[in-house]
Amino acid sequence: MTDDEVRAVAAPAASGEPASFGARLAAARERERLSVGDMAARLRLHVNQVRAIEGENLALLPEPAYVRGFVRSYARSLGLDPAPLIDDLNAKLAPATDSVVDGIARARDYSPVRAAAHERASRSLVLGLSLVGLVALGALGWYATRQPRPEAVPAPAPAAAPASTAAPAA
Image: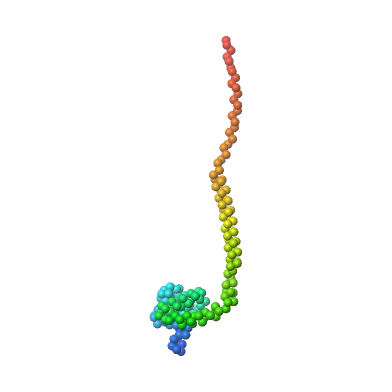
């Protein structure tokens, strides 16, 4: 959402004050002459998150508990009372979070049973690969440290008894 769109949303209602939490925050920020970037730095949020808060684009923001904290911090940093802003935010969050069935449908992608089966399969795979690796290392170590067999030395041939050559006495 651009700054012009935020200003259009922040246009004062009949009572002179913007009607929604995002518009009130944007109007207060502009009264302080702070840019969106300045506010983001002050709140330690990303510029896109500040724009999403001011534009009330809740789909771009994290879980509602975090958004409530963001709005509360935003209001306090500008010297505003956060209670009416949080009330307005809760009213806008209620349709998205009041249905238990919708919550179950969103959480359906994660199943602890599937996660446990995946964990078990992963554990078995790691254990099996570790065992194969240890066997391979053991075989390699055995092969590297084995002593070569000495070659068979042929047995010496029995020495023939020396023939006595006695010289004939002459």
